Length: 594
Image 1 (cartoon, one colour):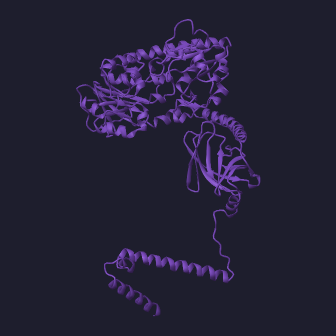
Image 2: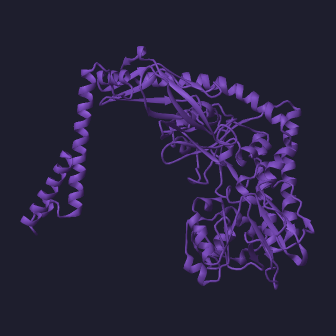
Image 3: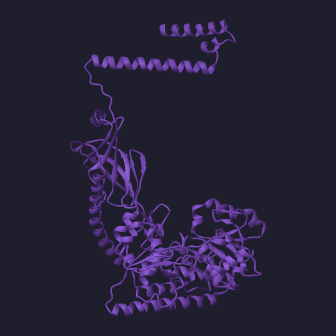
């Protein structure tokens, strides 16, 4: 009853104040404004809560009850608070997963304003992120070893998850980290960091050797038919949805990333390994009714095509079909395909904007209906969406991820189908297969003589002074192997990411490449060199290379990358170099530095 009277008194007082100060600033204080009144009520309630909490603690302690507030790690927190800001070293280890992964120890520990941050250097380069207490941390670098900076505490197990890409698909693994506070020492030096990396490398090499054996065993257990079955699942069905059945399918010798099915009246269906389907509609024919909605149409004959898949220009050149191209994503001076450059200089092919920024208005105004794109378009989906929005069919070329070099070239059959030039594609493929077989015969001859294969380094120096070399699964590396050479890096790069090049610090590259028998310097990106002196000027370490001292250094010509249609010829020229006959006659793709 007393509480009710008190509330009534408060209400009367508020009303009285409101009448006493109408329209003045006192309104806000008195509570005539609803928002202000609500705020005052919240403030009053909060004050009441604080008072009740104080009474609770006071009562608890008076009754002898132990009341404590749990801190994030009292012992660890106090330890961090006791330490001076600066760098320390500390022993640490991880547990969990398969037990094969390790971190380098001791670790670098930084204390800053009572917070501790440890630098974790893994024995592998395949970790992309770590997650602790709901917070995700990305790798700072992963060229040699995955490295992270994460918040830590001492003398307790810290659970976390990490994603590894070492397997065919990324996997998230549970781990636990523990730092031994008794090993904490003041200071950290670059020598410790070097020892740390070496220790991690040694453990990583031991585990890598075990992994190689296991992977080889698994690979032997999984035959080619199973691998092909897995790839087949990525293709959409040959049934276009209208009840048609294929009359036949194109036989491909090397390419695995596309298929072509022939139907009645000259219709053909191109299927690619990303699940896309394209129906070639013959000249004078209309689109059939009842097609599945995902199927894109390519109307024949081709005309005013926008080509942004630059590696495919040579296909049109070899098939003498440059006249169907209307626009290019490269300017005239950027082409090493001579006929393409000439066509642009003469205005027969226009610059249609870069693949990432095409000139939509120009393409639309000139009746462009087909855009030929490389896999780079997958990084700019908004561009593909806009091209399709204005009425273009976007064809994505996947030749860059073919396993065999001739698989990349066999995409000429795909473009030949668009142009109705299958027979011409057959002739071009047969010639390159013949040249590659000739290179293989030379290899067989050297092997019969028990000649050791030449170790080959293939790279260039970029503007930052790093060596840019090829991944071990790249087509250049494979061409070197087909030609009888031995690429210096056996397991460089991640095959699942389909990256052709790998950037390496020059000192790291030097450790392996200095003993190569032959150096091939890639001038396609940075320009052709003319002498060994010019090569050495790129980095003084090159002077210490065995191949440089023996004057066994070759340079690529600028046409190497854009000429996909002559891989057989390239393999033969590589073979001539490796056998010591490279200087007997001029080569199309390589020349020796003097």
